[in-house]
Image 1 (tube, rainbow, N blue to C red):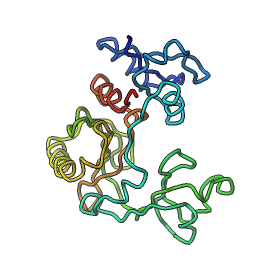
Image 2: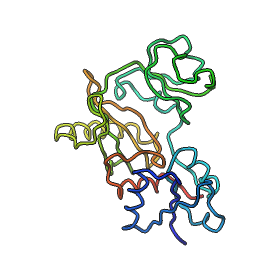
Image 3: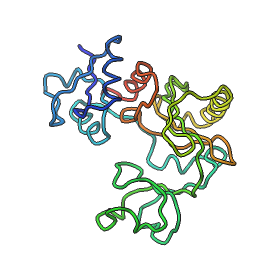
Image 4: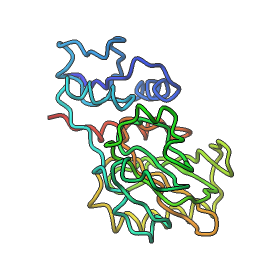
Length: 243
């Protein structure tokens, strides 16, 4: 039996880096075709998938995989001790009267996450499903944002991706690294039981408030930024369960 990881037919820097990382592993990364269809003869050998969320879910159904992720309202149940901001969860239509809030879809990205003065400012609002589930939060200023690939309660690899309103994957300072790991250890000690063994967690520094949890994302569809691709690959594989 081969250990095949199905890659999206969409070529991205992340998928290309994972493909290179697989050359030194026991995994075979394959792009089958542009129709999101894994041939029958390969389905029993596919142990994981990596790509856009919709693609991954389609392939998972074909290949009898369970894609692990936190429950939909997970972020809203995290203590403000770790989020440093008020977060709510509900249907988009519940927030029609809200003003000046950050809002993001909880599953498929029906619209761009961001700060909105009115919900009607969402591009294509007339076509957006008001029953779709979303998170909202008070507006905060992020000075730094960091992506962490986590397995068995350990950060296997991480990368900054945003600093002072600009894309930035430069290394953290020694102090930032120390403080992030200290924050992560406190957080994971309390919330590890609520998360899959393999997950991507984003942390950052809120201006005036310090380190905070940004969100959790499934490893099977998360971008790598400057993370070590070999280490990220192991987290991706373990985020998929063969049934």
